[in-house]
Image (cartoon, rainbow, N blue to C red):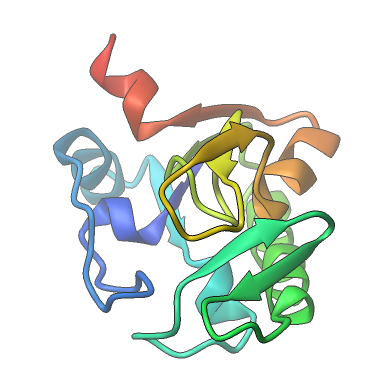
Length: 140
């Protein structure tokens, strides 16, 4: 079983209230081979919400508010869903402060990327799940 970022399955849960649909992921969910989560919503953040980026060890929204706790809480809830469903692989939204893998936005809200993982991605890696992003699917 796979766990996937809900926004990639055409669920409008991103900070801007939109989805980022990926046909391969939509099909996996429709076939019952993947389950969707939005760690940010699970952490109690609204949709839409103020965009946030990782800055050091914190997640700060564009208004300068620290939303680290909501991101951590949501990541833990999403991890529990993955473990309960015996997921072995995740397909996550690239660059996100929750789901980004390898590269995430740098906290300046200028579109600059730095090496790193989002909060949820880090937790999944600690539990030895294979992590892909929608970008790596396109190259297959």
